[in-house]
Amino acid sequence: MKYVSILLNWRIDVITVLAALTLMLAMGDGENILVVFITKVLAVILGYVTHKLAKRWEDKMPELRMFNDDDEDIAF
Image 1 (cartoon, rainbow, N blue to C red):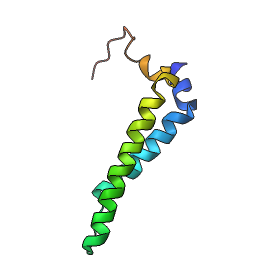
Image 2: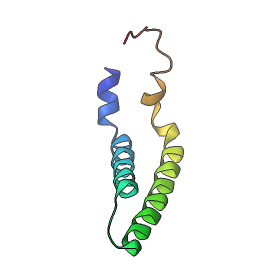
Image 3: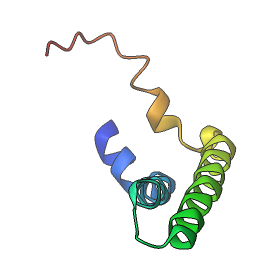
Image 4: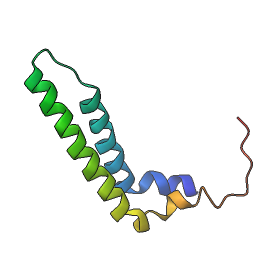
């Protein structure tokens, strides 16, 4: 049941999308040096915004802390 509550929390979706966009901008490349510079600056800004949102919403996402409280042993 706790996995369903994680999937229904929209804050996790927002942070995931922002992190994916940050990764795409950071990994992007181009022929024009100005385009490369702008994408890297946007990646840093978007990464900072994602980090601040995650810190701000940390108390509103108790589902993520439930994984640390588990007594289950997971074998990989």
